[in-house]
Length: 77
Image (cartoon, rainbow, N blue to C red; front, side):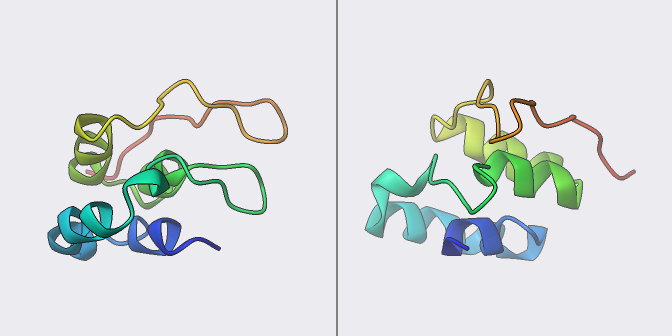
């Protein structure tokens, strides 16, 4: 699993993402074993803040995983 995926599984890591992307600019749409980007991890953890940050950084919201599906955008409240 890419470090960006692990970071986007917990909203507490939001403070570390700017430095991570400064050091790893090509990781914004890095794929994990399932063909998922960090958008999938952020939505799975239910973090609107992480999702918004990824989108500001240029993450591809239309990416489909290896099953050909988009991530459902459901958030915890």
